[in-house]
Image 1 (cartoon, rainbow over the protein chains, first blue to last red):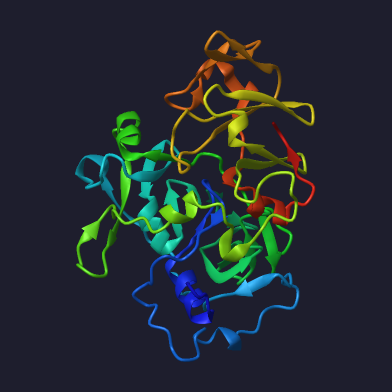
Image 2: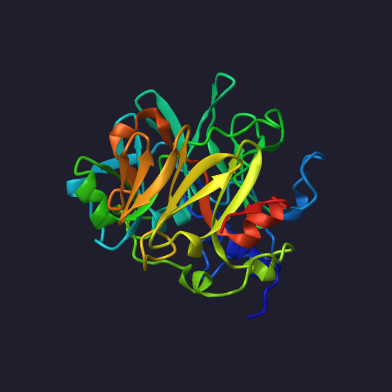
Length: 126
Length: 231
């Protein structure tokens, strides 16, 4: 498959990185996000972004910031109410005595959940 | 898992939309600083040089195992854009091919050829030294390593998928010892339970979870060019 800028932009939109508590490796694109309707300019405004001068040169802006929306006010249901397949991979955490689980495939869409349990504020990152 | 409180500010992170050495860079919405998961610190912005507060409490597990251990768990629920329904899971995993291939992202290759590009490793930093332990060295039986004078214990069950988290602990004092099929921390005598991936409570403060994560050698070695390899 030819990999061009359009593909990369769509790729980065659709695909977050394996990271955080888990596997910190980048993941390639194998699907196009609904918002991957690329414009002719391909990188959809990425070329206009002015990066800070002190950012290391190897940094590559692939899509505009915000192209992958974090979850800032997460909503939860009780485990007994959840509709999750037995074999599904989850990120499980216990913070402040509260167990929480996040579907890895759902985290693929958002990459980061800005969460809180009691007094502990934390980011679940995949 | 990372803390969000820095310098008295509660930060909200999001993807920057960019990669650094093929790995995730976040930005916080409050100061626009750039934060690298791979180095564990801010690369640029008002927080430049600040270490991320790593919380080694996250674990990737299959749902059936998690709900059995934590019947009181909460589960993230999101509204699916297509159906408008609240969902807690989607079946689609677009990354299966990538994990099965020998190639790095967009042709990336490890510059450091001590290990193959796509070798899965548990990677961590301890006392400012970077370490990488190939899965093969501790999968199945578990293993104890010397990391700059501190004992580190790593374990993965045999035959699990690559998504399954490695268990990782460091002994603040004492050592890890295998007796028969069981790993113990000595002198506390606390035993490791492969099912839960944790040490018995009688280890007290002598055993603590080790920060770090499972990744591929090329990702880690591109950022840490003098990583020690634990085999």
